[in-house]
Image (cartoon, rainbow, N blue to C red):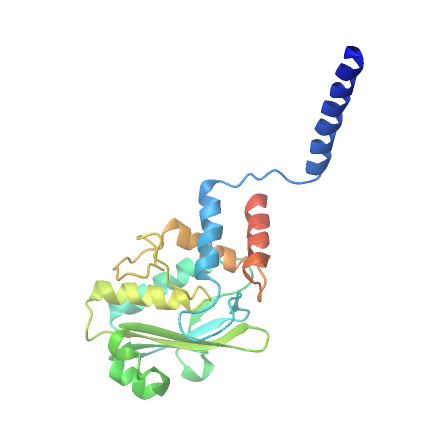
Amino acid sequence: MKNKILVLISILITVSSCSKDDDNAGLPESELSMHEINVIDYFKNVALGFEFGDASRITRKWNSELRIFVGGEPTDELRDELEKIKTEINELVTDGFTMTIVNDSSQSNYFIFFGTGTDYAQLYSSQVDLVSSNLGLFSVFWNNQNQLTSGHMYVDIARTNLIEQKHLLREELTQSLGLARDSQKYSESIFQSERTTTTEYALIDRDLIRLLYHPDMSIGLNETQVEVVLKEILSSE
């Protein structure tokens, strides 16, 4: 009787062991680093939806060239900074998107205004209630396929110094790519919700830009769907 019990226990252990292996068969082992896990979490915070309005929380990005026309009173330093930001973004994207600066407003689909909030609101009346409490603002528009198609932004040069202006230019323009939400995480990030003066992308910022404009990242993905895509991209790198 004792031998039978031992044999039965042995069979149960064997069956249990086989069942566990079978359940895991074919499932990839997660090899994501802590940084990559943080990137996925941050992407979901920043890249889905907008701070204002009730737009659905899905991915949106430009599928066409973003052509910038500059107006207002930009200094040479701000024009140089815009060139720098444009170059950095173009070096991060890999899905065919590109950002250019044009001299003819009729050829543009994005307008950057350097001036006062009052002057900006005269150009765009929808911003009247926002400019007094915001030193920088952006607005983007999309089609029925959730592709970003046009936009505009401003940097208040009356109430800010040069460093603050450079920060606002980088923040508002980068958010216009579809990374439109602020976050309290990562004080060094350009998406930090508290007032900062950072004029460089943090590593995690660069990751968010390149992942949104990765060939495998689609438009219209919700939080669950985008997590799957991000894991696939990061796991294959």
